[in-house]
Image (cartoon, rainbow, N blue to C red; front, side):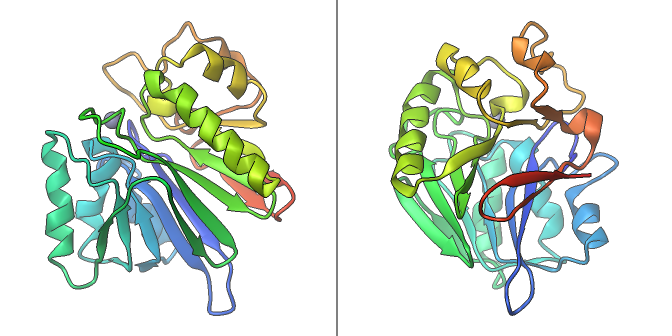
Length: 246
Ligand SMILES: [Zn+2]
């Protein structure tokens, strides 16, 4: 979803009791199209689970705006808060009865309806928010999507190897991946790897850091989808393939 210079993804899983909504990151809580407005427009009042990659404001502060009107049964983050003031949101939400806050480190997996959530990273604290960034592999049947948050370039190779092991074990294929940190630097093997993934998703808006970095060859890739250019980007999985919806 377009949330300016930030990141937020909404997953909806059909079930016999009605749709299950999952949020991965919550955006900055500001801008013209806030997360709050976008959930209201879809008439979503209950989130089954919220995953937070790391407590930087543009990934977590949207939660402060959601909290009064929207219930979440479960909020999961790594528990590795660094020095970031925005991490205050976790104890604040844990004090509200509607929210259950869990700290989880890899390896951790959670089955929600027909979809498996596999936490790939972090397994240990390295005291850097982008190295400790939670990385989530989401699998529906043979279709997998990787959510990388702001994962640091020096940790990408290790994460890629773990992802490939999990995919092989489940005979699943990676159909889409988020470009870490709004189009920032990638390790060399990630640059090669991303060329082979059908969809590369870039969550970005106006920012003072010159992101996405303009010299990256992936910016001209036909697989690239950018929230600052496309707005809401929609996909649907049937368990065998991921289809882009217009
Ligand atoms: Zn960050």
